Length: 189
Image (cartoon, rainbow, N blue to C red; front, side, top):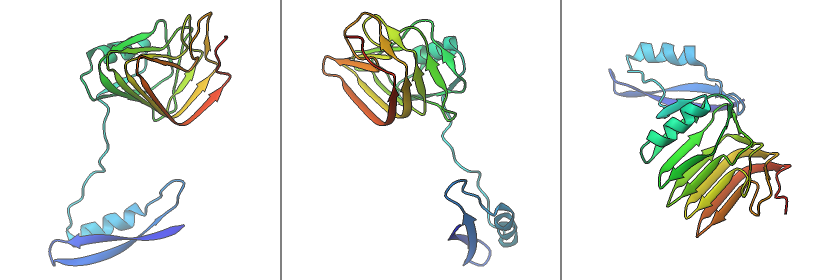
């Protein structure tokens, strides 16, 4: 376990007080009771941890479709359960982030997302499975930007079409894939 000092400011005496915090790389375990005791002794204010809350939390296809449709530019959408697509979701010119903290799966026997006219979508922490459109697999991207990180593509195909099983990028589109795995994902050309 690594040891790192935590410096606390004592408001009543304007002195610095050091507390050792033990943590591990795997679970970042803190000695909270000791920290709370020292904060209480010095009369220091405590703050709740800051986290970025999603603008939308979705667990069904209809909720995801509705969130994408009504979201404003820059919105975040958290996927909280596996979602089975019944059709693809069209995104026209919006900038959105769609993520999962639980590694949830987006799947369906259809293209999953069609992006066009300057859409800018970022996906993180998801698995895309069984995406299969006539001409594209998971993403059809036209004049837009697609960013995918910390995600998996599993068993995605293109029906009888001619583009990518994971993504088809046309008309000056950009695709960035970071820390992504592809398993059984291929075009049928």
